[in-house]
Amino acid sequence: MKIKNIFKLLILVYFVFYNNLSLSLENKKNEFGYYFGTKIYEERHPVDNSFFMSQEGYMLGFFLSNETYSEVYKGLKTRLAAGEVDYQSNGTGTMSSIPDYQFETTGYYGLLLNNSTNKRVTFFSGLGFRYLLNASGLKLSSTGHSGYDRESRYFYLPFGINYEKDKIELRAEYLYFIYGQQKSYLSQVSANYSDITNDQEEGSGIKLTAKNYLHDNFSVEFYMDYWDIADSKLDVTGNFMEPRNTTSETGLRFLWSY
Image 1: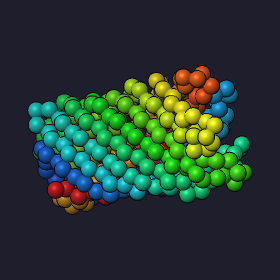
Image 2: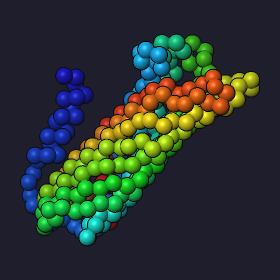
Image 3: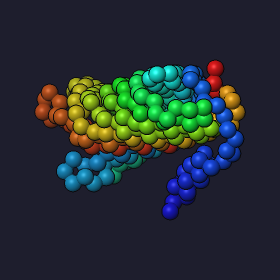
């Protein structure tokens, strides 16, 4: 087992088993905070599914959550982050310190089961939007290849369950991919190229979180997000496509209630 996997396991065990002090569950939870995560993006070859390129780095972000638990569950979670990633490809070399940005917001609506003073189970769905910007434009790789900015937009439906007991909150979501669009600014490479847009129609994702309330108004949350997006449609010229890609992000959030 790799060291980073052992580290993730220890964090999860901590959240699940550390300190069983009982706390009453609130019917309204408003939280904000900051988070740090590591990010790995990979693209696969469209013919043989072999490794094509990867970007690895970190993200620093702001997180905001508003939730109400009454007869039904309503929630809105939003995050905004910036970071840097390093590029690696067998064909076009390496590139370091590429600015990377992301914005995501999701609205939730669900039903409460087993709702008591210190235990609650919630089933939910909703609608989410995710925006990504990888800004490698005007940068050169180690082999002299020019980078270019890439924008991604996803729309998705989350289906999940949230479990709360005393100080512990566990959440799992399956993300059904509705539609995505990838825009590549190839005009930054050469004036002879036009920017291209690719429609993405297939994919899925998973979100997992484990939260521990260390105090009435402060909590620490371990999170993991994973996306697997299939090959895109060809652009309008019929010459360019966005290959299958996966993104995994893992980190910690530090949250305050207000």
